[in-house]
Image (cartoon, rainbow, N blue to C red; front, side, top):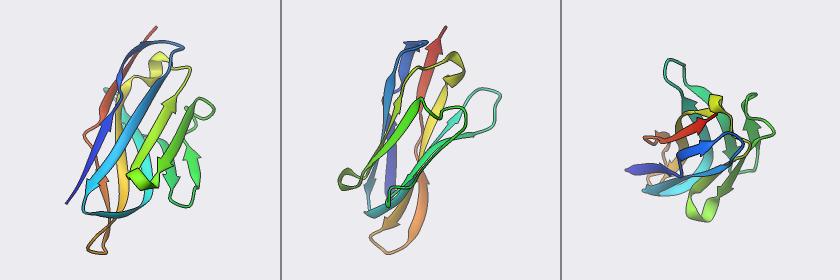
Length: 120
């Protein structure tokens, strides 16, 4: 089995920064992609960023230029550096890990999320 755990959320003021972490553990052979999504109360799940093991990166329109995603293949971890945070960035941030398991199967696993609150 694979576990995905996010951390790094918290309460900050507008204009400040946070760095979120996502780590996959368990029967992980390799990571082929890691994504960040977010869910705000009353809103649908929104794509934030993706990075693949080959280094391909995509960002959601609302975070482009402010957020940076990185991948540490050796640690099976991804990070989301969030700068110039805005109140509308307030949400539960979830990580999706695209994992090749030691069994050879490729599957997506989700974490429970880490909450980010940005005050005006």
